[in-house]
Length: 336
Ligand code: BDR
Ligand code: CA
Image (cartoon, rainbow, N blue to C red):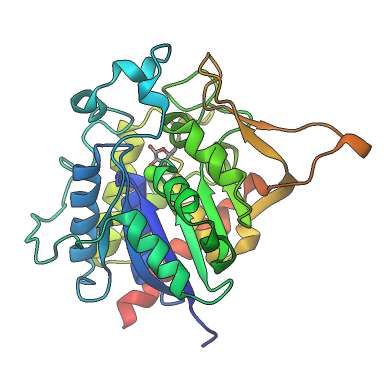
């Protein structure tokens, strides 16, 4: 087999983060070096616990360390003018996915045979990346960008070590449920995303425009369940649960629900870059604290005034490839 993709996941687990984590642990073309947690869907204590539960569920506790990261965003909750300043921690527990994983069906009671590591996420990220060769590790960041921004501000020497930084975040034509124009991960920590976009990583942005076009339907979820393993069952439950809880879903004219599994699509693009329809873009984040706070803005200038691109922006995705990847990973893991 070709060399495995060495990856690190930065997550705010979160139902769709959980789907991505399970697939990262089961896809044997990935070597998951560790997982860092960040506050977002839930406070970081809970996103860390949920991440530990997923590692234990996949029985990878001897291989995959979980490192707790930042709870609060860099700046946004400090601003008196933003709605987020009205969200102290206990209320953030309700953001986006009402119960996180806590009440999702069929999630085994954790034994917590695995504990979070001593090092904090940022220290471990810097240490691990500094020890790697140039372009050795792919970072898949599917929560607010707080940990990555802190790491790169503290030690920019990590930048060349990263083969690709894949971010689930941003939106061109869509918005998350908390803002009139910003996607959730960008909205929670706009300054962090802007710092990261300006840091010089080879960055792929997987925004809502892509994740909505790679939707999963309830009948797709049953196709996933039909693989017939506990992991397949769990993924189907998580997808259906997310489809019920999330406001970020669509209904087609036939009445079928379209469930975007944002974070898993970002991961899929590491294995299959062609799953994303991309364009080179210069993307910035509105950090002015007004109505557009957290909105990703693509520079539209052309010709001589066109800026240098700072990322590849995915404006669409191949839904069939995404779905068949999920089914294939589960089927292959069954045979092992
Ligand atoms: C993103 O926000 C979170 O709620 C999801 O986990 C995903 O990372 C989608 O906007
Ligand atoms: Ca997430």
